[in-house]
Length: 409
Image 1 (cartoon, rainbow, N blue to C red):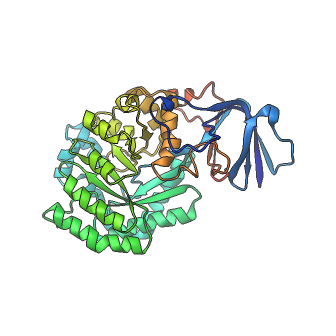
Image 2: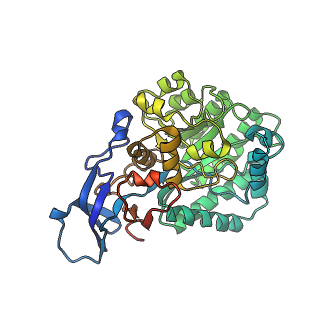
Image 3: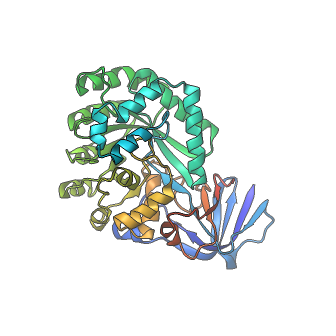
């Protein structure tokens, strides 16, 4: 199957040399080709360039992109989109003045979602989750990471991970699974040390045996899991071959960034509270900082200090944090817009953060995230727009005409 996209107004995120991620000043550069073509063969990008060099062979399909742009599909490296029910009542509680922490202390928050999920069948959980997955695909996401963590028991955590596996088997979007057993402390455990023992001894071996995840995560935060807890679970995960990813610095900075770098975490995510020592700890590492502006927007908490991170020469990725409690949206277009409006990122920086850097934060930099020969043709075809700056500018509009996964719309 060969598909030619021709007369592309501008082809975005063109990378002819292998690039794992971009950092610092490089984040403000998006390589593009104007008046371009793109050739897709058997689901992979096989050629691209200026229209003056456009091939004239017979193709199975030719798509005229006059006035429209083509770019890599969004890469959303942090979601919790496999969940049951919703938490809209807590939304009203926050409007009435309760904080996220106060709601959690009253039995809401993560424990509320865990109770609902534990009572939901696997088939029902799958059917709820596939609706969300189909919706984010329509919104331009071509690769997504999905975490467990709303189970908090052996049976429920495995249920979540098996649903993620079913989604991966039944949809052509790239999906990565993360085991987040240490998301909150269940009521039946008196302390985090005992619960970490349970996660390590009872759940982790089965997750590994059934090959249900590639990454292991922990909510390293005051009132949740300490740096000591984090070190224990990440060390145990690495013994089974799981790569670390960590929730850090959402409400307080307690050394989670340093723990992430120490364990060679693929990413450290949230980072709403960043000290100079946290930024310094990331220098020279291969750990990707990930910002989740949708969470800051929804909870009215500080935004990740993107300018300080990027101006320090570091990379940054953007993701949705799609979950029922603190970020009930998987719309990467909104994330890109919010990053520009609230975090003062340029459109170039936000697009890099949501494509090539997001791909790296999932270990998918060799498969998606840029227009590169041999990568999957996971693509966004926009409606006619003036420039790619219109994407974050038009935060209330759908600027996407078509989505292609492995070259198929």
